[in-house]
Image: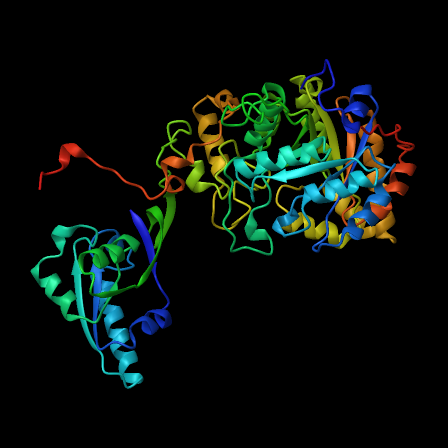
Length: 226
Length: 320
C-alpha cells in the first residue's frame, strides 16, 4: 500500500486558516490502513481544527467526509461532489494522487495536502510500516529472491552490500534499517545458491520508472469508446 | 586484470608491474577553491609515494573536485589516483568526466560508491547511485578494452572520428572487515571479474582478520589476478581509535590496538609505531603488493613514515 504520515498540525492549520468553509476529506483505502487519513484521522483532525479556530477567533465551518478512494472517479458521488463544491478549501488526507485527482475533477476548488506521502510499504507490526517497493517499473525481485535492493538499500546497490554494513544493519540507520545486501546474501546462502551472487548485475534501466518521465499505462482492451 | 602488457602507462601500474612493493598516499582536496592547499599537500607526497589518491567529496562534503585537484597534482609532478564516486553523478556525467580526466593526463581512477549523502554537509541532496561501484569498474573496463560507452556506442567523435578511449588503470576498494565477512572475498572476486586492476583496502586495525582474508584471497588465487594495496592509517590518539571504533561503519579494531594506544605515554608515537609494524608485516605477506598509506590530514608525516618503513627512495616516477 501507499504509506503516508500526517503533516504537522501547524502546517495544516496555516494551509486553511484563511478560509471559512473547510472540508476535511479522508480516503478509505491506503490512508485508512496506514492510519494517516482515514475516517478516524478525519474526525480527530477536524476537532483539532475547530479548537484552533476557536482559540484564534476564526470563523471556520469544518465539514468531514471520507470516501472509499480519492483516486477513482466513481467514489466521488453526489454527496461528495456537493460537499466539495460547497467548500472554499478541501484538506485532503489522501495521498499525493488523491490531492491531484480532486483538482482534476474540481478545477475551481482549492485543495491542500494533509499528509506527506512517503512510500510503498507493508505494515510489519502494530504501528510500524516499512518501505518495500520503489515503483521502479521493472521488477528485479526474481533476481534477488524476493528482497529488493532498489527500495531497501539506501544506495540502491545492485551488487551490494557496501562496506558499511555492520551487525546486519545499514550504516545510514544502524538502529532501525536492515542491510538489504546482507538480507539478500543470507537468503542466497540459505537457498544454497551463493555462487549466483558472483554474477555482475549490469546498470539498471531506470527509464521504466520515474526517470523515464511521468508513468502512463494505457489498456486498450479495457477502454470504452466514448 | 591484464598482466601481459601495460594498459595505462601510469607510474603506479609500472611500479606494481615491476614487482616493486608499491606505496600510495592520499590527498584530501580543500573545502575551497584554494589551489595552493593542493599544491602544498602535493609537495609533501611527491617523490615519497608512487601515486596519491585524490578523494571525491569525501564523507559527502562538497570539496574542490578530485579531477581538478588531480590535474594540479600532475602539474606538481605527483601522480594522482582520482577517486570517482557514483553518489553524485550518473553514468552520463561519469563517462564525460572520465574522458575529461584522461584528456587531462589522468591515468588512475579508483571506483567507489561513496558515503551516503546523509553523512555529509548536504544531507538534503538527491542521491544519484545510478550505478554502483562494481558497475563503474566494469564501465571503465569496457571503455578501455572494448572502446565503448556503457550504451554500446564506440568512443569516437562521429563515424570518421578517431577512436580515442580513456586508458585508465582501474582501481576498486575492498573492505575485509565489513559484514557479511564470508562474502568479502566473493565481492573482491566480483570486482576482479568486473575489470579491476588494483585494489586498495579499508584501513587495517584488525590484522588478524586481514590475515584471514588474505589467506582466503590466496586460496582462490585472486592475488594473482589483481594488485592488492593494504590500507594503513597511523592512529593519532586513543580517542581517535575509540571514535573510529564506535562511529565508522566497516572498520574493526582488535582490543590490543586500543589498549596499546590507551597505555602509551606518547600516543602519537605509539600510533606511528603500530603503523610501522603493520607495514613491516604487510611487506612480507604473500599476495600484498603494496601499502596505501592514508595519513588523514597528515600529508606531512608520510615522508617520515615511508623513510622509517624502508620504503624510500621510491622507484623513479615515470611521467608521460
